[in-house]
Every structure is written in C-alpha cells, then in structure tokens.
Length: 306
Image 1 (cartoon, rainbow, N blue to C red):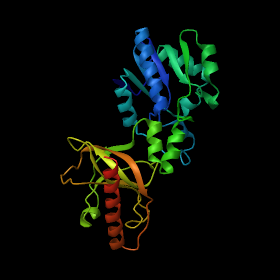
Image 2: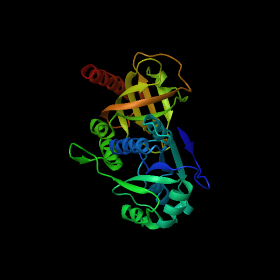
Image 3: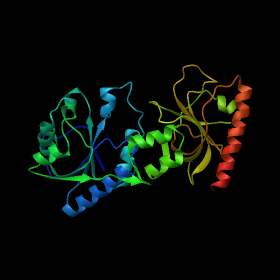
Image 4: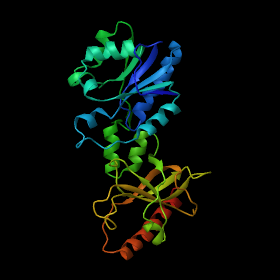
C-alpha cells in the first residue's frame, strides 16, 4: 500500500476513491472499503482512500473535540488489511478548511487525484463552511461518477464513530465490539515506567498515550504482539489517582503468567470487559488489595469466556 502525505500537482492516472475520517474503521467504514475495492476491481482502477490529519473537528475545536478511536497508524493498518492500493493523508489546515466546495472537487479530486469513481457516505460534507454535500458533488461530476454509501446498522442501530465512543464511555465493550466488528484496541510500544507495579507484585507493560483515550477504568484484556498466541490479563487505563496528581493518561497491562523483557516491542491491547471505574485509594496497601481483587475477577471472566 502506498501512503502519500502530499497531493501530486497533476494526477498521472485515474483512481476509484472514497473519502472520510474513518475514525475507528468501524463496520460502516469496513462496508465502504469493501465496496471501494469491489468497484476498483470492476473498473480496473487503483483503489484509493482520502483521509485527514488532524480530523476536522480537532482543527476547528481542539479542546472540545471527541477522543480519537484510532491512531493514524491504526487506520493505515486497517486500510492495508482491506487491500487498499493508495492512501492520501491530507493535512487539515486553514487553507484546506477555507477551500470552496467547487474548488475541492476540481482542484483536488479531479486535477490532483484523478478520480473516475467516488464513494461517500450519505452524510458527507466538504468545502468551506461544510457547504458541499453529496448533491453538490453529483451536480459537479462531469469527469467521474459518484456513489452513495447507505447506512450500515447493527441490531437496528446506525453504526457510527459517535455510537462507538458512547459505548466505550459507558463501559459497554461488547456493544462497541459489535459496532466495530472486533474488540476495541489500543496499540503502541512498551515503555519504561516508574516500576511501581513491579514493586507491588504486578509488573505491567506500559503504553504512553499521546491523547485522551475514549475510555477509562480497569479491564479484562487480551494482549497481542508478545510472540506466539495472544495472552490475557488485566489493564488499567487512566491517570492513576492513587499514585500521582495531574498525571497524563497511561495504559498499564498486567499479563497473566508472563515474565519477559518486552520494552520497545509494539503490542496491541484488546479491551474485552470492563471490571470497574478508576478510583483513588487511601494508600498503596489498599491499592494492592484491589489489584489482587481485579486480577481474580479478570481470571474468572476468562474462565467463563475461554
């Protein structure tokens, strides 16, 4: 898969394209990617995705923007899994935000990307002030065709990134997994921590988070990337109020029956079941007792869900 962080001056060949943020790459996004690859094959064109970094909502209202469901690398991994040939990552900045809808079509889609076929969602908006819509694109499509992606529902609920965020925030991980088509996961490299977990008898694999996570609490998790089969354990995701004040969010995973040095290794932590919310305890002894209880509860969960 080719990844481009800048547009060419002029496209050298035609493509089949879909456009969106693809946050979380949920089952609605997956349906779009599957339809894109199908159309690209039928038309004998490369399949291409146009996505944005940062997401537009972060650009316009950074403080109030919702937490991201996936990192840029996570999205690229999902695109690759669907056999996408090219990904164009557009830097969403003031220049792109102020581009009129007609110029976005002519200058970017037609001239720079060479679109012949475009797939967008029924709620797709683009251009300055979100003035462009599916109807706008169809009206201007003289050199390419436009297809609308219908709503994808699961158990009668419209699949969306907002619905996934709501499920995660409520601790409804099984519900989020149905919307995503897979367990929600956070990936990253294992970093050195302050070794507190080890001193308490629970050494953890720590992943430093660059942004506010979409969920917090204590969870039964599955960890991939440690070599061989996936392993299970218990993880804390949050600011560790008993240990530090004003700490940044951190993911700490205690992997059951595992004792190897894994610093620097990239792992993926899948969140399967929420055990409880994060809490402040009066001292480390109380915290240690609670960790023992969390581990026992997580083991019970995996015994019931092998």
